[in-house]
Image (cartoon, rainbow over all chains, first blue to last red; front, side, top):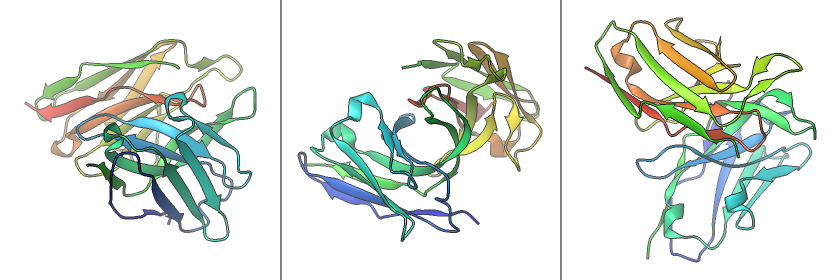
Length: 127
Length: 113
């Protein structure tokens, strides 16, 4: 049974950093990229970026590049997502999700839908 | 980035009736090499993460009821629920994976009339 278990809710001040973890069970990481998707209150889904835990390669949405880092620890099956210089508009539920690889682009980047999701982590940025 | 636009933003349908949700991409999401559309659909109920319903535009994920179907080609796609059930009340999202820079539609809220 594939399970992605995320860390608990966080409250941070503007300008601070936050790290959200995502631990996989059942050897979930083997060969699968892990993505991060966030959802602001009452809003839609926003893809943030992904990491390939086995190879370490990552890709991020342009608007978040420079503020977001995703790392993985294959020994514990855990992926970490850090956001720096938090802004009020970063208040959201953050989801980790496993990439279902359905193809590769010309640069060998995996093309994925998302088949398993974490429970979500609420990050609140408040002064 | 590929922009995904859904219509309508919200929809109210009577139980047992058909519900249709549309999704339009700003460019084709068809890979000529394998003739597949790189388009997925998700269902999200309040307080839950999204659930994958469909990929390749029309392939149901395991466990998804067959009242859900997907269709379309090129830039225009449709998710159809043939006979709406109470448990189908949710927000539905389309997503393109034609590019590794993934984008979602804004969502369509489906309610019971």
